[in-house]
Length: 321
Image 1: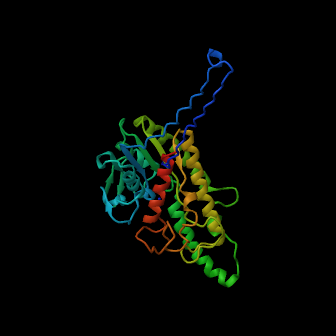
Image 2: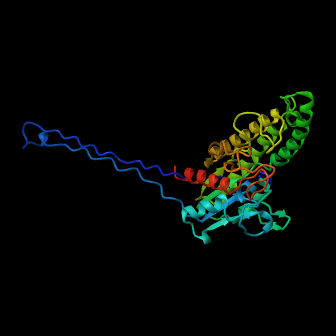
């Protein structure tokens, strides 16, 4: 998200079973008494791994800001040579000439079809990288459309003040950030998620038009906060109720991405489940997402190299099924 950023390969071999049924009659010379052999069903075909051309689309969760080596043009897109598209392309054995990563930090769905200005250059409309020859597309986007990064920043600032007041008042279950973004029945974030879903549906239709032979994978967002509990310590000083609120909103975003992918005939890649326990509040050696003070090269509240590799594993697993 945040600058924040469609994909799925594990191989499942279905082996045919040889079943031989022999019926032997009393008179071996007659046709009716000859042995009958039931032939084995042919083994189910194993889908061949996609070989490209492969185009990676998305935001900063795809591009991998601050993960070395930073590569690609424009520099303002913050693409890493070890982000999940690069890992996927390498594992699939896709030639460099057949791999294009056009993801960009800060991208929204609008930037798929219009040029995106960055601090260091302009990224062309991402869908311009697609063609009739494209065979694989991954898309990780939507977080910036709902303003998740700015919401997280504000919730952390509010949480820091809340925790200071909590020491004095002994209030432990308030959710000041939720009270701002979803007071009562007026859930601003849910409304943005619905609107983002409509834009994503149109984008997926356009991807299909431009790359009709491509397998398309919509990649969800990995867990930023713990799957349970209301505490993130100093890593992300949020008010307890806001930990629950933000977790729920991220899950709602991922649910929408999955529903829209399915409706468009694309494959949804769940990166949330495999990242559970690797959130920004987990230990430095375990986490996939870096907290306010990163211990590994990565942008704040973004995947580190372990996270990008974990996301790549999820994408490859989805591709193989």
